[in-house]
Image 1: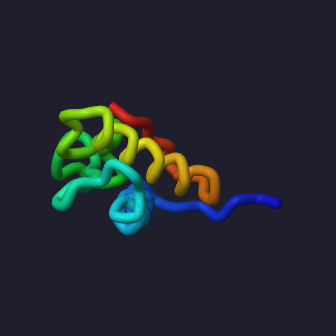
Image 2: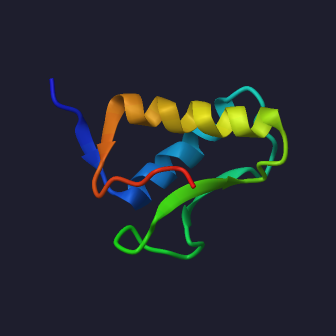
Length: 80
C-alpha cells in the first residue's frame, strides 16, 4: 500500500507534534526546516534544536523516523 505524501512543512509539523512523546524530549525542543525560515520549496533539509546531547538527538530521530515510516515527503528532505 502506498504511503500518503506530506509536504516538508507538513512533515515538520507532524514531527513537532510527536516530539513530546519521545524519550529524551526536552521542553522547547522543535524541528525546523534548514536554512531556518526556509519554505518546503527552498529547504535543503531539517534539523532539531536543542540537539546538545544524545537524549535530544535520539528524541528527534525517533520522531522523524516515526513520521517517515507512515508518510513520504515530497520534495524529499534529509536531516542536516
